[in-house]
Length: 240
Length: 229
Image (cartoon, rainbow over all chains, first blue to last red; front, top):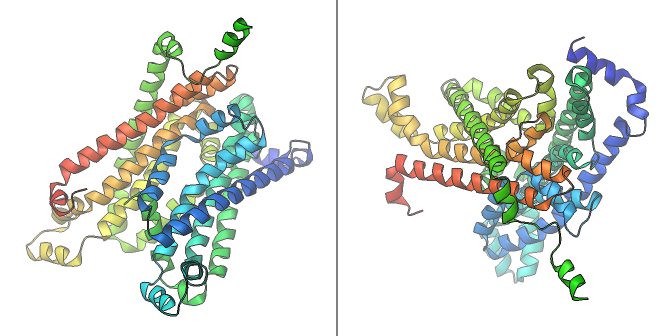
């Protein structure tokens, strides 16, 4: 039996879905820890990014954070954090995942505020807006497309990385793949492939869903040139 | 009492220990060598495939859309899933790790190289054409050199993320330094081993990044005059 046939057989077994530790359980774990990590990342990255963008300082810091997290292996964070005060279990995994959501969120929040039309900013100042009002009523609405783009990138990254939580028994869909590797590859090949399909399918699904959300929250006049804008934000992450 | 205090002050599981590094230098160096060679081979393969792809997308514009779309979708596929797709066919070992890691590096390099190529000013291209350069001559003498900054950015990004990604190779038993990190975790959560592996990983990424940045400076002397960075 080829691995693909074995994968189909494995996916067709209803017990593999409903058993304790089956696909549905793992999917729930995967989604809940991803959601927690993204929420934590937003809570940390957005205020900082918006503030840095508002004051126009700290562009170097944003690039530094992005480059640093690129160089740190996910596996290292996942294994180190449980040994700190966070302890084993969910909190450590969520924090580790949130760390990888921060760079896109931060960079896009920063770029989003920075790219706000200087004329709009001047006009608002001329109307007597204070700094806080300027941020809340002019820069923040103009930055929404960027925030949405950052949210999408960060969330997809977290959902993808959450598969690695299985290395430290953190649960999630990756656990299915790991269990398959735990068997012999000739026996577990189907399960490995099935797990891979589930993980990849979820990531692509989240990506498509959030792309739709991104389009919906972007006001129509801001839609044109959005592609160019998001590429510029990506360049900011890349340090180009 | 003093005995207990000294016992507490000297925990059995420190975050870093020279003793560990000395006693296990063979294992550590072997892991580092494996990691470096896996990274180098993966990036090399990625460059060799990515540059022709980028040039193809640059020459035949209708190809650019599909190439970027495919690379974009592949990039959202989690690394562990990619391992899961390839392992049943390529088996357990270095080939699987190399393929997965090279695939990710490929995507980064293609995108940046294409961005660099499309940034070549049309006037320059027309001038080259007017001077009698053919398609290949223009590519090698004009367009690729002008796209070098973009290509090098992609190369550096790809290298740094490859160093981090190779660690996931533990799932098929060839993770280089990841083997050290994961081994430490399984081995009663031995912090010194985990930390040594992590530090070496970050250090390796940093060294390779600086190396490539240095090569880039040597290859693009005309950029140094314009901006002092």
